[in-house]
Structures are given as structure tokens and as C-alpha cells.
Image (cartoon, helix red, strand yellow):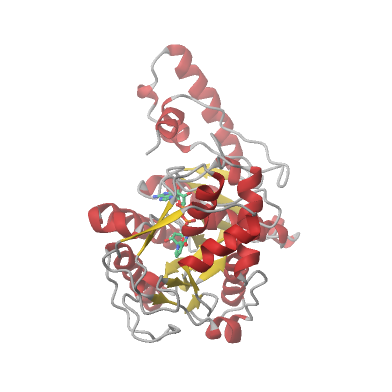
Length: 403
Ligand SMILES: NC(=O)c1ccc[n+]([C@@H]2O[C@H](COP(=O)([O-])OP(=O)(O)OC[C@H]3O[C@@H](n4cnc5c(N)ncnc54)[C@H](O)[C@@H]3O)[C@@H](O)[C@H]2O)c1
């Protein structure tokens, strides 16, 4: 966890953040709300906490009533992990489509500057009381669940971290949903649930044999959702992305992971000199140029798929699972060349050994999403994906900075 996050939780901070998009919504700093008063360091701090709690509690009285609904209140979508990379782009898209959102994020990897002005709650799914409080205090209709850890290599070294956050914390979310009688969920799953490809492109029916704890944790959650549907009627759409890439076309939000493990930002960083030269793992794969082929899908296209999936549930549709990819893979060398073309900069790289467990080719079939959801990716070609990423990185060479 970043020191700044700990500092923010330890020191009383303003409870309310204004937002230009939804002026009546407040952001609750949950640590402030939930912290036992005895933890207050001094009488002055104690008084500040009481005053701020009073403000928070006043805001709780603003929960939407049935009358407000009848007057045309828009459905409220809770976005867990809404300050992260994919979640923040979904938030921006939902706002553009006129939907109302509330974000929930523990800021372990998220950025407050990525909120697009939407209201957000700082809380942790690992703390059941944080997420239950959100459902008690807000009239939530549906959930998009992005919050998770997502680094394959790290998951092999620290499986507990992944099962705790991606399974145990996810089940806390489901408990809170059931308690509040919220029965619609769109879940960020991954192609990592499939493991080694036995056929390309990979369809939804591909055998599911994850080769790392990350994929296993996501598959476990998918299975839990199946049983929760059968027993409790919780309807879920599992969206299995391949490699999310690119940035919002405005260049205002984009990808800022720390550490960064994704290819396009690493190549752009190498080209600008802000990151070291790239190591390409393996040049002897059975692919046309010898480097691995992966399927890159634009993050705003993923956002569109999330809303389509939710709309299907809103219309009373059944639970489902969809692969979201381009159906067309690009090799590591093709990505490097495209970055060089788009930026006009040389991206230095050298070849290293193959990494254990890296398949030569991972490409998904999204035919089912096209047919059943009506998904139409708008930014599918690699040059467009890289151009949007470049626009973001050029405007924000250090990402969100302290945001
Ligand atoms: N980025 C990809 O290429 C990719 C591919 C397949 C699947 N996914 C899935 O998409 C989702 C989002 O990925 P991303 O790349 O945006 O990651 P990210 O790290 O940028 O975003 C995840 C967000 O969730 C928050 N979070 C994590 N654990 C939390 C918790 N316990 N409580 C509250 N907030 C928490 C983090 O602070 C972060 O803001 C993940 O579920 C990931 O598994 C991503």
C-alpha cells in the first residue's frame, strides 16, 4: 500500500468532495466515518471528527426515496475499482451515456484524479463494513466490479494476496449486495481463466485451466457467481478481457500502473526515455517474427461492452459470459514498430530469454459479444489504440502524478 494512502487514512481529511457533474453527491471518507472515536489523538482532532461525522450522517439522509424514483431518478451504478485504469474509463463512458455512478476504491492502485468528477467513496472490499455501509447509505441498483489485483507473475509469488483480494474481498461485495437486495453485477474477468490455448481464437467454450493464481482467483469468482445466481437470483455478466490498452480519446485519463507491466506504456516509456529500454522475452516463438502475439482491446471499447452487458441484465436477461478481444493479435515487434510510427521516436529494445508459461499466441473471439450484446468496438486497430495511449502519455508524462 502506498504511503500516501496510509497518510490519508491516518490524518483527518475533508469528508466532502464537490463534483461538477453530480452536485448533490458527496464523497465519504470511510476511514473517518468508521474510525472509533477513541482513536482520536487529541481533543481538537476529536472535535473535528465529530463535526465531520455529523456532516457525513446528514448526507446519509439524502438517500433516494421512491418518490424521487417516480420523478425520474436515474439508476445508480456502483463501480468498484472505479479509480483504476479500466474502471475509470468505464466511469467516463457511463457519464457520457448519461448514467449515474458511485465509485468505490481503496486507492491501493487507483488515482483520485481519474474520477472524471464522479462521486467516490474511499473504502476497502476487504473490510465488510466499508462496502455494507455503501449499500445502506446509497440506493444502488447495479454493480460493476473492477476492483482486484491483476499481475500474473506476482500472483505466482504471492497467491494469498490474490485469493484474499480477488475472492474473499469479492465475496464481501456479494454479501453486501444480497443484504441490500441488489441483483445485477458486471464482473471484470480475464482470459487468464483459460490457461494454455488449445484453439485460436479462444471462444467462451475454451477449456478453463488457469496456469496461475490470478486466473484461478477470477475463475473461482465466476463459479461463485454461477451458484449465487442459482440460489439467490443474482444475475451476473462475466466479461473476460484480453489485454486492455489505450486511453480515453480526450487524453484526459489513461493508464498509470505502478509498477507498470503492460507492453504499450512500457514501449512508450522506452521511446520517451522515461523508462529503461525494453526487454523482449523470446524471439524464437512459432510466430511470423518470432515474438509473442497478444490481443489488445481498447479500454473505451471495453467500457462500451460493460454498459451493453448491464443493459441486457436491466432488460431481464440471464447471466452470461463473454470474451472481449480484437480477434486479431499483434506481435511484440509489431507493437514496438507501431509506437515508433505514431510517436516518431525510436523505442530501444533488446531480446531476452523466453519467460516460463508465456504462450506464443493469445487471441480471443468476441463473436458472441457481437451477436448477443451488439458490441461494436470503435478503436480496434492497433494504430488507433497506440495513438490514444500516446496522447495521454504526452500530456501526462508522469501519469497522474500525486493524484
Ligand atoms: N488491464 C487489463 O489488461 C485487464 C485484463 C483482464 C482483466 N482485467 C481486470 O480488470 C479489472 C481492472 O484492471 P485494471 O487494469 O484497471 O487494474 P487497476 O489496478 O488499475 O484497477 C483496480 C482498482 O481496484 C482498486 N482495488 C483493488 N483492490 C481493492 C479493494 N479490495 N477494495 C477497493 N478497491 C480495490 C485499486 O485501487 C484500483 O484502483 C481487474 O479486475 C482485472 O483483473 C484487466
